[in-house]
Image 1 (cartoon, rainbow, N blue to C red):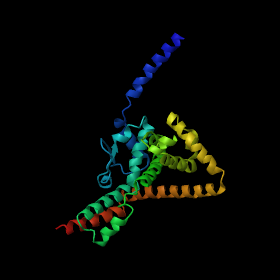
Image 2 (spheres, rainbow, N blue to C red):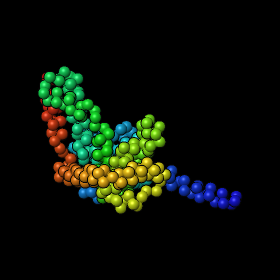
Image 3 (cartoon, one colour):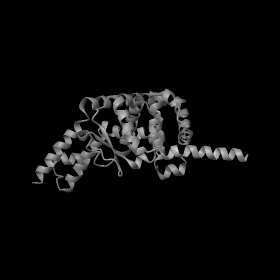
Image 4 (spheres, one colour):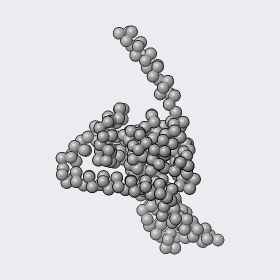
Length: 275
């Protein structure tokens, strides 16, 4: 028995350095290049790891996509680093950073007493100015990222695992649900419908097994209802079409979109009004 315990101990010591040596920061440019190359995205895109939250408001023009160390601390392998990187690319592809940049400029303009103008009133009353975009935009970026990961050869279930490693809500903890369960379920449902073979292949870690104890009863209940299944299939088919459209548009325009044009107009208007 003592010999067995010693063997296990030395085996652990041999494995430990490989975990300690894994540097997520160093893997970002490697993994990022793989995603960019395999998806046919502009080769000029580069990646920058930052200590703060990622700010990709100028990613479209500068072709630099920030990745936050605050997110990378939850990544334990290349698949999970790919999930972090692909999510950030997804926010840019889906025009979310452009929307946020427009919203912030509108709020600044309002603070400078320009609110009487119609364009600013419109901005102030929009959903973007009311700060309702965070969760829905994150969910959209997650599944855009999943498409990018699959094309690049990474396991998309790592996106599920990554978001469940991140801090969740107090109520999720009380109920014993995985962290960020709504986001995780959104990713899982998208994969179930569009990439069932990827779900079947699985993902070997405790976080994923725990997530399945939450997800399996939800899927089973939905599968037992013809009405719920029909709704689910329509929603997922629509999401897949939207993702394909967003990726194609990004490739065709280099990321420029209507929100960028609106931002430029509003910025010019605000600057001229201050003179």
